[in-house]
Image (tube, rainbow over all chains, first blue to last red; front, top):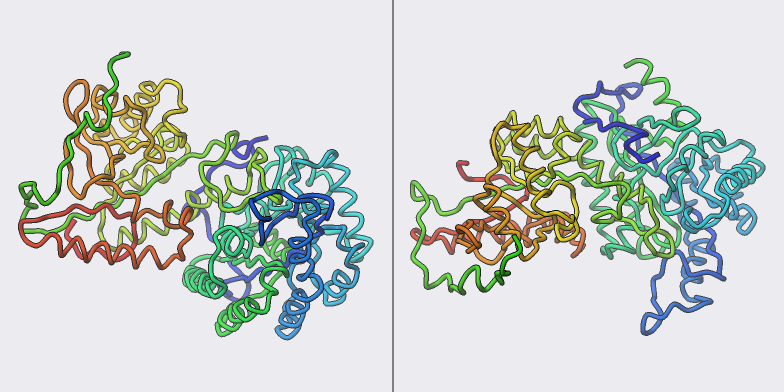
Length: 291
Length: 259
């Protein structure tokens, strides 16, 4: 199915507003992405292209740059979210549970939500048997974390035309790939409705730092500007602000303070909830019944 | 209509702005601000016209759901923020609209129509006009979609991504258009020759334009404000009485002009 067959156009101003509990205005949804980059293939992202632009295999410097996030950067995240008592969503390549058991175990032990994020980091279009990969990923995460994930994000948000059908069939309840609204929505699949949660490609360190090449400090500014706007709009209808981060990017020493500053700002306001994906899903499923 | 191609230099002669007679605006005004809101439909079965995120390890796998969804956000949510700002400042913008988008995003077209915005043609879908096959048919379908919705023929045209073929100005005149926005070569309106009668070129902008600024040059958001203010102040100075300029600006800072 193409997107139009899954969901008709809808203008937000034409919808009845959804309300958060206790007149809260904004839900901040933090998503930490953990990935496995296979050294035998081209790296998912590059900070340093090889001289003359050649694609080199193995690409050790870019592999190592990502590895820094797992060895060092992610521990800055655990420190920050532990201090703030925030339990983010962990968007996790299932293979991370095997290759980086120390990191995935720390997230599990801190009570983070595990969200499916494929087996390893490559476009889902290149996966030979997508249904098997989805099943294997969810099985591994369930065994590791103790509960079966209800959420899914494609690697780089990628989907093929039948990905939502395969996910619904595997028991997934929400996806993050459809960054097309401020609110949760439902899309059609061959196996019943699937909820979309408003993940982000705007407050996301990959587009901002690796594609658009913004300065480190701009992350704080953009998040604050978005938050201030959504907080104002939150008097009228529930707003969700996703923040998507990667340890090899936002966990760098020159960037972490700009991430910390975002939470310093939003936590000065009343009516701000820090929820992970499954908490947003549960709220949405009950709130839409009241509309 | 396979006729001789007119090169750009055959459509108009070089002209130095300093050598031209001055065009006065009514009531001694110095500057016209022209706000163009572009509303497009991106075909999910084609490569996306612009992207915000690239797939892991590059390439361009299809379908491209995340970038389709990112654009769709603008029509579901973002447009409604812009319309609040224009209402507040009582600005009637121009809606440069893909013909197919009028039906697809009918609430947007209706909001623009209710406010008396001008509708101009912007291609039938968001696709390089050099790739549409039958350009005249694309123009006609766009004209018909706008006429069916607004009751009036559009008078202006902006190519999708400002693209043109050698023939575009000729076809536009023949299909009833009076002005075109793709020729960002001056601060003032001017006439372009076509194989029939001339068409007016109105100064649109690639400089105060969020596609160029945000998606290609990757500026921070506030640069849009800074650049538009700098642009405004220079044009306002240039337009000392008797030397008016005309400025295209899809930006968002308060307009200090009667519209």
